[in-house]
Image 1 (cartoon, rainbow over the protein chains, first blue to last red):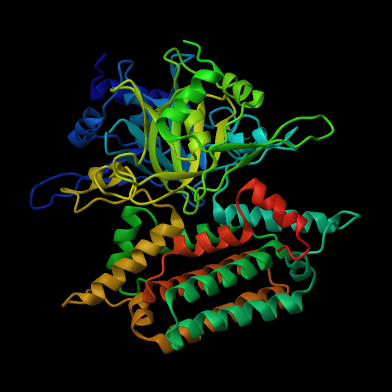
Image 2: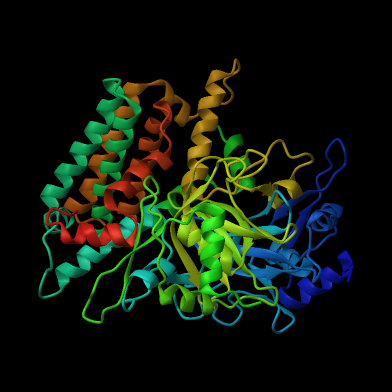
Length: 285
Length: 285
């Protein structure tokens, strides 16, 4: 089934009031430039850009017209969920800036969040080298899984194999978030009547003075690796110390690493368009 | 096609000399516990655990006996590649601790790295809530994509839409690595004859004394948000400052954030088994 661009427009407008706006810039080559409307103030002007068509043509849709679509948290890197997308689903994702999939069981488009309101707000969309697999890089409004879990991947095969009974779900966490989760666990243990085993993290969590003196000390040692021309492994090790101790402080203050990364993204303008703006600014970082 | 566990053992041993070792612990319930051999010293003792069979039975294989398998970098969270896995592929991944897929075009198992030597060394395997999608969480030995790119996702649809010609490939990077890449770009610009626009990052890159004084200052300000009971948004903002300035130092020293996260993972023992060990230790962090 081939779907024309006009059809897709109908789809996107009927589903989500497509928010793709085209700004007509007459460049030397008189080519249109595309500006993505902000999520807060959707622009309903939809124009036709031949690039979108040819781009969607370049995707290697399978015999059912589908490609794998993986939604990933732009700040943490967590894989939120995986579904399938057809041509309209990708178009709708681009136009609405909300991750949209094709439900194989219901044979219809669905936008993650249309029921739960936990949309995944798109920052970019990537194709793989074979052009048959797609990443929806976005920021989730809330938990992505229908179970209420942050992501759909909370069943560790390693846990299932090595334990009699798995005590609880464990999200697929990468190193930074695994450490954050360990620190949070130590904090939770402190709140229990029996504090569990003593640990350095617990000592830091209970002693602001010690924690702050360690953070200052580790930051100083990180600087010394540069000042004293120490080797790279020392720098990596001291930076690990800075990160760990600073993350304990974040835990004390109930701040998530994700919040910090969001601040960084907003400052440094992750999206290409914003990046370009920041390049224009003379005061750009 | 149903494949028995005995068949799978043949598969895994014939393909990769499966390295799954089973340690027989007689617990109260006389159940076997599974210990994953270290990658450096593969243990060729393969025993049969009924759990593996029932676990693989629980996966919702599609009508072709496949499930989506996504390989993710355990340290950075980067999605490395996506393929499909059948029962033997997952079994082989578990037993060899190397990400293994089923090639639909060649109708055969293939282990990422068997040609390039860039294996993806598995740290854990996760199933999603529907049990039809799998994450291979692992550490790549080198670039994953056959093109030599770090990951297979280097084609940004947003870039393609907004630019006449895309200047170069841009990996799908999450916030932290996007910032790292921006800092690396500034550093590269400094090496060029025309240094490009002035920027704060460039000033820091060129002035160790300024950089170190900023890192100490920002670490101090992060501590003050705790000491002076400032609000959470101040803490997130100061932590962002610490991270950014420390990352400029990493760039000066040619240290990757990934290296730092690897240090943290090795220290804090990301895998469940190691985590358990660390819990037993009294001096555990």
